[in-house]
Each structure stands twice: as structure tokens, then as C-alpha cells.
Amino acid sequence: MKSYILSLGLISLVFSSNAQTLSNYQKALAILDKAIGATGKDAPNSITLTAKGTVHNLGHYETPEKTRDIPVEETYAYFRNEQVNYLRSAIQNNGNNYVRSAIKKADSLYQIGYYDRRIIASTNAQEFNFETAKTLPVKLLEFAFENRQSLRYLGNDKTHEWLSFSYKANDAVTLYINRKTYLIDKVEKLTYNDRYGDAVFTTEYKNYELQNGVQFPKNRVDIEYGLVERELTYSDLRFDTKPDTTDFRLLWLSKTFRDKLPGVTPQEDNLTFENIGANLDLIKIVSQNNKVLAAQFKDYIALFESPSGLRLNQQILAEIQKRYAPKPLRYVFVTHHHPDHAGGIRAYALLPVTLVTTPGNEAYFKKLLTATHTLGNVPSKNEGLKLKMDFVPLEGQKAYKDEQMEVIAYEIGKATTHSNEHLVYYFPQQKIIWSGDLLFFRADEKIYPAGNRGKSVYDLIQSQKLTVDKIYTSWPLQGQAPFGKVEELKKATAMK
Ligand SMILES: [Zn+2]
Image (cartoon, rainbow, N blue to C red):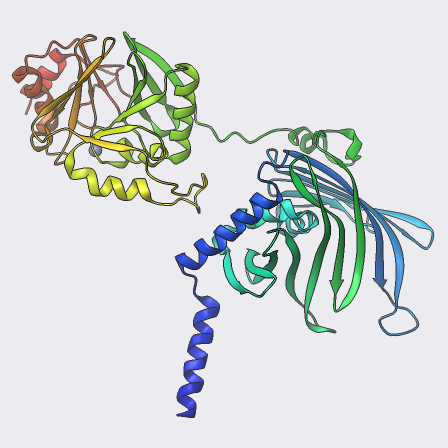
């Protein structure tokens, strides 16, 4: 019996230390979110501050654990968009000045120590990122969010919620979040030293003040091996510095690296708009070798196809809003459920948009539309689905029309043998067809057998007596002619 209890205890210990559940993560994220809100959601891109105080240096002195006070003055600078952090720390020891400088951009780090004046370059900025993040709670919360894959809710007591995260393997940080203010009171990190053994390093923040929408502590105390290691007072907050400024005395850095500092790494796709008919614009997405279509109705815009990529679709949305302002996006039409045509619909979930599709996609699309994306690179919760779906009946048709624009959706899935349900869109005014994965018109004008896919579109044109000047396809972009003609399709259909 005793060994049974022991092994049970062991199992639950192992389980609780290794397991992470989605609900635990979500609880931790909700608390982190609240802390970020309380500390300052819209922190300025650039923050610079001075930290002045005393290091109680644990040196080789006359008695055990005797410390000597060393004055320290530090400048910290943060540039979120440029992914640049900077530290300059000056200490006075035995009447001499020693300066440590470090700067990182993304994962590249350059530093010079207090005593060793060689420039050390590395591509591992994790420890420096933690050191600079720990200086300011608003940055520490950002850092925890960046590392949210490891986020855990540990529990609470009367005064604090406990969250933990890791920024590298086997290294966990615990945040003590005040249950009243949701500000960080304390951060703790487990450490080991072969003289002191197991230990914990603690940083405490005190006397928060609101500046520029952000809660900044006035004071900070670090405790190491149970002794106060340093006491700092923060001052001279600035929000207007630039990462290339010579104020930061970065002249020791190589010029190429210094020149890189102000740059923001672009994360955007290259989208090109091309007008192909009255109120119809093709949008070319080079990185995805894909195309989508934008149609201007009188009071709103409709998008045709939504290929995978949350960030890509947010960019498409932003460019549509900019280009066709003040008309909002109100419709997203997809040809079929494949990712390169409908994989990005989640980007429109929270908008009053109508998604036009076929009934067989309802459950699958609903699953995509209601998923949370807090772990993704475009973090998004699901704050309630606003998008509505509209279905084109199987083997039927449906028209969407106002004074300025008309499009008719035809469902021909069965005939395509590509997907069971598949829509083809016809614009009668422009005499244009928009199709998904059914047709290919090569740039070199070589014609290949159309197969069932091509035949399904040709049969539709014939049976509905559609007048068609140009046939446009979505995927792919490269190697394809801008559009095809019915004559070419007819030839391809005749080929075996
Ligand atoms: Zn497909």
C-alpha cells in the first residue's frame, strides 16, 4: 500500500511538472493579458531610461558575505519595431570608472565588458533579452508574451497570481502579479551556484508611476543568495530617441551593424493591383504564387478567394480599406475549401462580412472561423464571430447584384472531380469568369488536355449560354498567361 501511494505521488508529480493543458495556458494568457493591460498596452515604440543606485558587491572582503557598495549608473534603451535593445552600465570601483556596453538587434548581440574591453559578438541574445526585459515590467510582459508557448499558470495566494514562462530550455521565470493592481511586484528565477547551491534570484519593483500611458516602477531591488545585490532608482524616461543616435556612444560598433539598427524588418507581402475590367481588380500575391480578385460594388467591396496566411489576409484587408476607402469589405467569395483558396478566412471572422460558399463547407469553415490563434504570429483571440455564411445551392446558382456590379455564382463541384463542391463566378457586365483550380492557361500558350476540370467550366459556359471574353484563374501566378479565352478552353476540352 505504501509503495502504491509513493508511486501514485511520483506519477502525479511527474505529470504536474511536465504536462501543459490548453485550459491552463488560456488561464495564464488571460492573466498575462490583464497584466499587459494594466501596465500599458500601447507602450511607445521607443523607451529610454536611466537607472542609478548601488551594487552591494559580494567581493573577497575581510568577513564572510561582506559587501562593498559600488555606485552604478545605467542607460537602457528599447526600440520594439526595430528589435533593438541597448544597455550602457558605468560603475565606479576603487576610484576608477568601468563601462559595460551591449546592444542587440534581433538575435545579434555585441558587447564590451567592464574589465575586458574586447568586442564580443554573438547570435545568442536570450540572456541579454531577459536582462533588459527584467529592467522594465512593461518589457518583461512583452518578453513573456513572446515566449507564451511556455506560459503556465502556477496558482495564487491572497496577494498574487503566479505565472511562469521560459525563454530557453530548463530556465523558468516566475512572475508575481498583484491581484489588485495586476502589476508585476516581483520576478523570480531559479538558479544554481556550486558554492551556494540551489538559489533563487529575485527582482522587486516598487512605487509605480504612470507616464505616457505606461506604469513605470520608480525603484527596483535585486536579491541574490538571500542578500540585497543592488538597489536602483529609475529616472530620465524618454520616448523620442532613435536607435541610430550617437547619444548611445555606439561608435565602437562596426559601421555595417550600426547602419542596420534603424531598419525595421519587413514582414509584408508584395501585393500588386491590376485593373482587369470595370470595377474589377486582380491582386497578385508574389510570395504565394497566387491571385485574388477585388470587386467594387456601389457601397462595399467583395474579395474573391482567401488563401492561407492570417497576416497576408490582414494585409489584403488593410490595402483594400486604404485603396477603396470609404467602402468597407462586406463579402468574401471562395471557389472551394482548399487552403490556397480559403485557408485565410479566419482573418475576416470578427468583421460584419458575408462569406459565400457551399453548404458542405459549413462545419469545417466554422471550425476555422472560431479557432483562437493566440500562439500564432498574428495573435488573435476569438471575441465572437461576426462573419455570416451564405450558401450557393448544389448544382444551383445565386446572383449578387447592385446598381454597379453583378456576379453570379454557379455550383458545379460534381462535374469538376476536383472538389465535391466548387463555385465558378461569372461577371456579366465585364464578361469575365473567375475560377479556382479548374483551368490553366500557360504563358507559353501551349495547350494541354483540359480534363474533367476544364470541361466542367466549358460545359457551364455552353449550358448557361454565357458570353465570356476572358477567363481568370486564381492559383497559380507564375508561368501563367494573364487570362484565357473560351476558344483555348474549347481546344483543350477536345484534346484527350
Ligand atoms: Zn483546389
